[in-house]
Length: 128
Image (cartoon, rainbow, N blue to C red; front, side, top):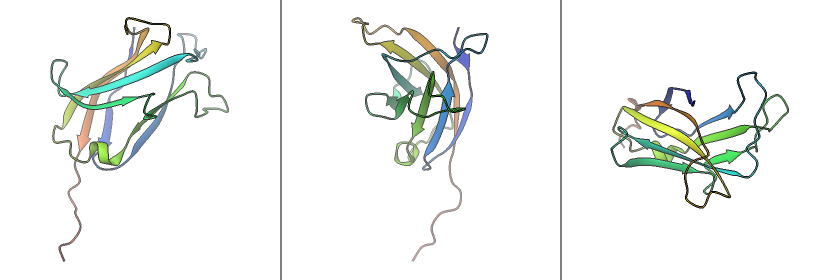
Protein backbone atom coordinates (compact mmCIF):
# COMPACT_ATOMS: atom_id res chain seq x y z
CA UNK A 1 0.00 0.00 0.00
CA UNK A 2 1.26 3.45 -0.91
CA UNK A 3 2.16 6.02 1.69
CA UNK A 4 0.14 9.23 2.00
CA UNK A 5 2.13 12.45 2.06
CA UNK A 6 0.38 15.82 1.79
CA UNK A 7 2.54 18.68 0.54
CA UNK A 8 2.48 22.49 0.57
CA UNK A 9 4.39 24.22 -2.22
CA UNK A 10 4.88 27.96 -2.77
CA UNK A 11 4.05 28.84 -6.40
CA UNK A 12 6.96 30.16 -8.44
CA UNK A 13 9.64 28.88 -6.03
CA UNK A 14 11.67 25.72 -6.65
CA UNK A 15 10.67 22.99 -4.19
CA UNK A 16 12.98 20.00 -3.67
CA UNK A 17 12.60 17.09 -1.24
CA UNK A 18 14.26 13.70 -0.90
CA UNK A 19 11.98 10.76 -0.11
CA UNK A 20 13.24 7.36 1.08
CA UNK A 21 11.49 4.13 0.10
CA UNK A 22 11.74 1.58 2.90
CA UNK A 23 9.84 -1.52 4.00
CA UNK A 24 7.79 -1.82 7.20
CA UNK A 25 10.95 -2.64 9.17
CA UNK A 26 12.75 0.46 7.92
CA UNK A 27 15.09 -1.38 5.54
CA UNK A 28 15.62 0.66 2.39
CA UNK A 29 14.39 -0.75 -0.90
CA UNK A 30 16.54 -0.27 -3.97
CA UNK A 31 15.16 1.70 -6.89
CA UNK A 32 17.88 0.45 -9.26
CA UNK A 33 16.50 -0.24 -12.72
CA UNK A 34 13.30 1.73 -12.14
CA UNK A 35 11.93 4.92 -13.59
CA UNK A 36 9.40 7.23 -11.93
CA UNK A 37 6.50 9.48 -12.91
CA UNK A 38 4.49 12.02 -10.93
CA UNK A 39 1.34 13.75 -12.11
CA UNK A 40 -0.58 16.61 -10.47
CA UNK A 41 -4.30 17.01 -11.22
CA UNK A 42 -7.16 18.99 -9.67
CA UNK A 43 -8.76 15.57 -9.06
CA UNK A 44 -8.21 12.04 -10.35
CA UNK A 45 -10.30 12.61 -13.50
CA UNK A 46 -9.01 16.11 -14.36
CA UNK A 47 -6.35 16.93 -16.98
CA UNK A 48 -2.67 16.81 -15.94
CA UNK A 49 -1.50 20.17 -14.59
CA UNK A 50 2.14 19.27 -13.90
CA UNK A 51 4.12 16.15 -14.76
CA UNK A 52 7.53 15.18 -13.40
CA UNK A 53 9.61 12.18 -14.42
CA UNK A 54 12.97 10.55 -14.05
CA UNK A 55 13.31 10.91 -17.85
CA UNK A 56 13.45 14.73 -17.56
CA UNK A 57 15.43 14.73 -14.27
CA UNK A 58 12.66 16.33 -12.24
CA UNK A 59 12.61 13.04 -10.30
CA UNK A 60 16.08 11.79 -9.37
CA UNK A 61 16.49 8.10 -8.53
CA UNK A 62 19.15 7.22 -5.96
CA UNK A 63 21.22 10.36 -6.60
CA UNK A 64 20.87 12.26 -3.31
CA UNK A 65 22.05 10.65 -0.07
CA UNK A 66 20.18 10.52 3.20
CA UNK A 67 22.39 9.47 6.12
CA UNK A 68 25.27 8.93 3.66
CA UNK A 69 23.26 6.37 1.64
CA UNK A 70 21.52 6.84 -1.72
CA UNK A 71 19.68 3.49 -1.63
CA UNK A 72 15.94 3.97 -2.00
CA UNK A 73 16.08 7.74 -2.39
CA UNK A 74 13.83 9.62 -4.78
CA UNK A 75 14.34 13.37 -5.11
CA UNK A 76 11.26 15.34 -6.19
CA UNK A 77 11.90 18.72 -7.85
CA UNK A 78 9.09 21.14 -8.71
CA UNK A 79 10.77 24.03 -10.55
CA UNK A 80 9.60 27.58 -9.92
CA UNK A 81 8.46 28.02 -13.54
CA UNK A 82 6.43 24.77 -13.37
CA UNK A 83 4.37 26.07 -10.44
CA UNK A 84 4.35 29.82 -11.20
CA UNK A 85 1.00 29.81 -12.99
CA UNK A 86 -0.87 27.26 -10.88
CA UNK A 87 -4.25 28.73 -9.97
CA UNK A 88 -5.80 25.69 -8.28
CA UNK A 89 -5.04 25.75 -4.57
CA UNK A 90 -5.66 22.09 -3.69
CA UNK A 91 -4.61 19.32 -6.06
CA UNK A 92 -3.90 15.59 -5.98
CA UNK A 93 -0.77 13.70 -7.00
CA UNK A 94 0.90 10.32 -6.91
CA UNK A 95 4.28 8.87 -7.78
CA UNK A 96 4.49 5.65 -9.76
CA UNK A 97 7.61 3.52 -10.00
CA UNK A 98 8.06 1.51 -13.20
CA UNK A 99 10.53 -1.23 -14.02
CA UNK A 100 12.49 -0.98 -17.24
CA UNK A 101 11.29 -4.49 -18.11
CA UNK A 102 7.64 -3.45 -17.98
CA UNK A 103 6.49 -3.45 -21.61
CA UNK A 104 2.88 -2.54 -20.92
CA UNK A 105 3.76 0.54 -18.85
CA UNK A 106 1.88 -0.70 -15.81
CA UNK A 107 3.37 0.61 -12.56
CA UNK A 108 5.48 -1.69 -10.49
CA UNK A 109 4.41 0.23 -7.43
CA UNK A 110 2.60 3.36 -6.36
CA UNK A 111 5.15 4.84 -3.99
CA UNK A 112 3.21 7.74 -2.49
CA UNK A 113 0.22 9.96 -3.10
CA UNK A 114 -1.76 12.71 -1.47
CA UNK A 115 -2.69 16.33 -1.88
CA UNK A 116 -0.62 19.35 -2.79
CA UNK A 117 -1.67 22.77 -1.55
CA UNK A 118 -0.18 25.45 -3.78
CA UNK A 119 0.20 28.83 -2.08
CA UNK A 120 0.40 31.95 -4.22
CA UNK A 121 2.62 34.89 -3.42
CA UNK A 122 0.90 38.00 -2.14
CA UNK A 123 3.80 40.47 -2.29
CA UNK A 124 4.92 41.34 -5.80
CA UNK A 125 7.57 43.55 -7.34
CA UNK A 126 6.88 47.26 -7.14
CA UNK A 127 5.69 48.95 -10.31
CA UNK A 128 8.19 51.24 -11.98
